[in-house]
Image (cartoon, rainbow, N blue to C red; front, side, top):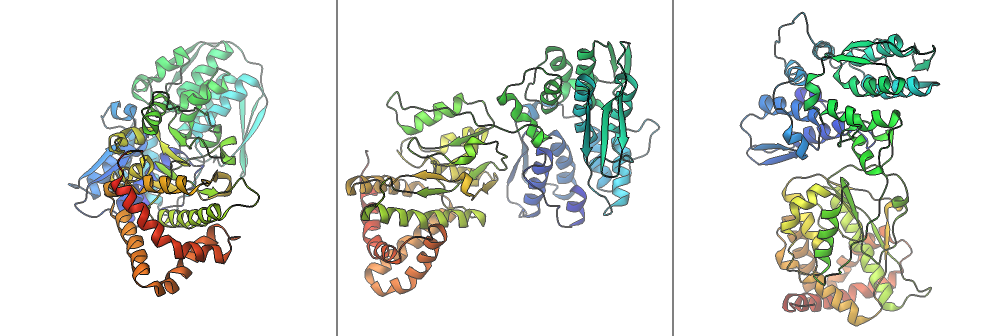
Length: 524
């Protein structure tokens, strides 16, 4: 990907089941490609040290002097800032002439060969991730076929096959389609002296394999492991995850307990190793300080990387019962309004129709990277991002935590993505009285003067102007109705045209009442 960015070629396609290192680097390179000279840009890199080091060199070489900030999780910011082999690799890919040394790291040699072979480089699976399956087979026996690994790989971590054959009796059989690993000899206890200087990522798996099999390990070349995603030497000794993907995987393969919350870090390098599950927590306004205060308490108390927000009265989507794969800092999800009544009232039908148009507009604008709406009734956000934006959510206004969050996320340049699928759709209910309807809509309208995002303001002005024009010139409905009818039909195909037309006729007057009421009413 870095070579593609350097040469101006299209970036490879990525999918949500790829490692965080890949997704984070891809997202950063894509955003750099769209960067306007002189504009400030912040790139959030999670805990991805690889992305950090490659981007530091890339920005120095291609965006020198630009106001670009690299940030990430607290552990990433604590990491040792000294150059590493990845720094050297990035410089080689940028064309620097780095002298060859007798003790050159396999990572550096691999970088030289990839730079020379570009663009005839094929993707292959990661031998360091295969280490955890070698560990599993060595401890439990049996055999596994691993797809995507290459026998003639340039990766230094391919030495894992030799280590497990020599010390743990695990045979590797290479096939063009896969690599087969299987336990083939009775294990003997003996002293193992292994130098990890050129393969430090293998240490957790190998160390825990030795521990489980009762084999003493003399490990050298592991000094830099104090400065990885965690202090891996200490983490291995204490059997702790410490938000470190390699520690979580190696502990799980050695049958040490790892909680669902601790498993979340695995997505950094190996998303499909274990699914991310949903842990429900309910926030309650038990101190009468309002919904926003209750939401703040809930998110401050959470420990997961992501939080999935719902209002108390929604019907949860099917996806909350399954493992989910997430990509983005703020993820806008769909809503559908349904009545509990077999024969909805006119008020309910009008709300369902209005909601369909709003939802379609929400999804279309977000998919075009110009999000103008989102709803806290069905929204996924990174906990760290929400906490960073909390001061801008206007606690003095009883509504709008979702819209003000959207504005703050856009302002900081974080990634907004959309999942518009049935399994992710939450169901909300319409209110059943006109009084409750106008009270709800006035509360929503009351936050409008605080909006600062230009896309949201532009959309709001356009809607207000179109409806004021309709009051002054009713014939404009001949232009407006076909546009809004297309939005409604796209989201709720069963909607009757005459209900949508009635909504179109009434909407300007209802909008005017809500705007005036919302602007002048200060308490709820």
